[in-house]
Image (cartoon, rainbow, N blue to C red; front, top):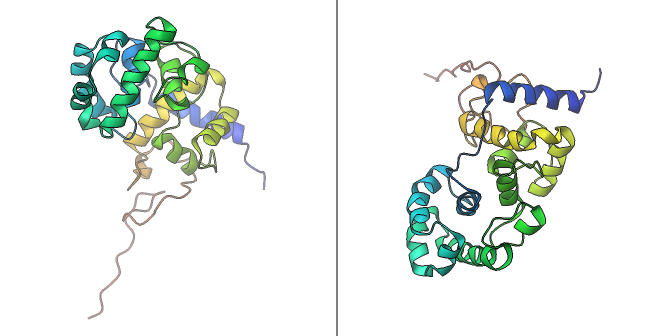
Length: 234
């Protein structure tokens, strides 16, 4: 039996994702790189939908890095409270805004090595900003959705986001990295949910080994048929 070619399967997965989500993009609403940076920092352990509810008022009151750097901690915390971990996030936002003013003339830098010097900005956040706004495929966003899908699809056996990213980078062309991250996130939200994934409806069902998927949700994941009911003893 021939061993499956990982590169060919990755290409097939990419083809399906491009067909299913041709316009895959960042779900965080933003009008400039500063807004995207702020929204991405706020999205840590929070849904994009919740962030999008909070940011309009935040951006109205503090439209520039200078404005946000001068804001009081209490006022920022009050505005972002619904996103969770609001004290820490408020500190990150104010300190990052101050550094943008001090080091980068109030502009969001377009280099990975500069972005990761900002408080609250690790590689994942930098990848979002670089890929979404600047169109630079410096890496692949590995959030909870991408981490889960990489494992279930058999694209990586790693648990660490950095190692997962390297595995994905080795399988997919660099020019697709930004799209891949957005598309996998959309797939995770629509089909491959953490609990009770909709495997029978998933467009990748024929390419997915469903590694680590719990199969006790009342359906056969491959066929979608209900398993036979056990008869009760009289």
